[in-house]
Length: 228
Image 1 (cartoon, rainbow, N blue to C red):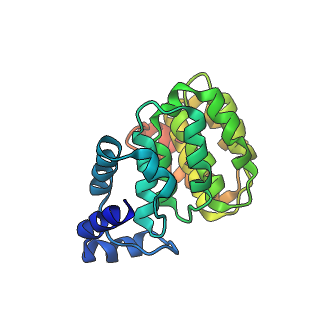
Image 2: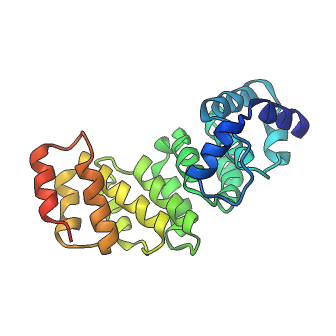
């Protein structure tokens, strides 16, 4: 099966897009140059037409696209058991070395919406993991699945407690804070008023919010006064 997948990936690769991705995504993995829509389509084909168990247990994970494809397949599985998903996802997370793997794969795991308590309990150790992209995974998880009215207060508390000063963690916290401002302004604004974050995260969250079309001009002007 690996030969089949490799042939498909190589056939979808574009040299110009490879060069573009290499500039956009800092990674130690080889980049083949396959566009995300093509990777998503291939992931759906694997789930629909191939032996998914064989793929998940034996798939090659040597390039940027191989890892992305593997994560997308997990997202397209038909109602998997959480334990099964955790089994395959946990070691994959430790292979992430760039923001794109984290953001695209974590956001594709829509089943997490149905099991918030189990998901948060399982991934809570990532909150204090020393790895930059493991911690970013936790932040992106919070942003995608725990910004609802039930979880917003606990999510904001988690965001305020995550160790900062790793660039891709900081950027994720700022992004999540911006999203929280959009969805739950009154619960979120105290984090900025009380200067909860480092100066970088604080100002980056304000910058992202002021660039958002979902925040009113009046609110953007107030946020500007909170800049450090």
